[in-house]
Amino acid sequence: MGRSLVLSVSVGPGCYRHIRISDEVTLQELSSEILFAFNFFDDHMHSFFMNGRAWDSDSEYVCPGGELDGARGFTNKVKLSMFHFNKGDKFLYIFDYGDEWQFQIKVLRVIDEPTLAPLILKSVGTVVQYDDEYFDEEEEDEDDEEEEEEEE
Image 1 (cartoon, one colour):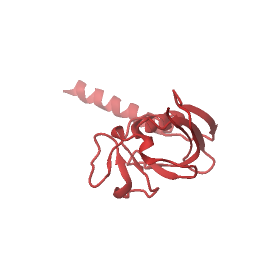
Image 2 (cartoon, helix red, strand yellow; image 1 turned 45 degrees about the horizontal axis):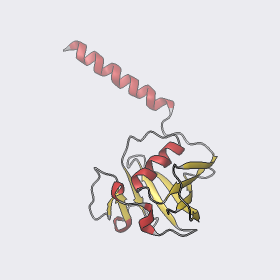
Image 3 (cartoon, rainbow, N blue to C red; image 1 turned 30 degrees about the vertical axis):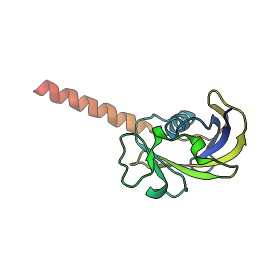
Image 4 (cartoon, rainbow, N blue to C red; image 1 turned 180 degrees about the vertical axis):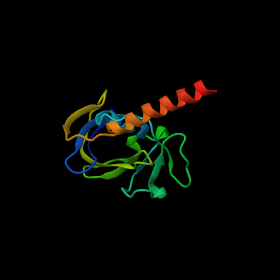
C-alpha cells in the first residue's frame, strides 16, 4: 500500500499549484510534475533543499549531471517516501540555476492510499518562464548562425 501527498507548490505571491502525488515517486519525477504544472520547459538543472534553505549542501539533492559537492545525492535516486513527510513540512525546489526559480513546497495532506498518476488539484495564478523577447533573441541567434554558415 502506498501513501500520497498533497503538496502546495508556490512561486511568488499569488501563484501556486496543489499537486497530489505518490510518495513512491523520485524527486526527479516531482521536478517534472512541478514544471508541467507551471507550464515550464524542462531545460535546466535543478536541486531540492529539504531544509528549505537555498544552496545549503547539507540538505541538497541535485539533478543527474549536477555536481554533488557535498550534496546528499541525485534526485533520480531518492523517493519522497524517504523523508517520512507530515502535514506542514516544507522544502525548497530551485530550477534553472541562472534564473534561480524558487518554488516553496508545503505538505498539505498525507493520505494513506496510493495515487497512480499525479493530479493537479488546484491552479492559481500564472508565471511565465520565458517572455516573448527570449524567443525573439533565440530566432536572431539562429539567423546569425545561418549567415555565418553561408559565408564559409
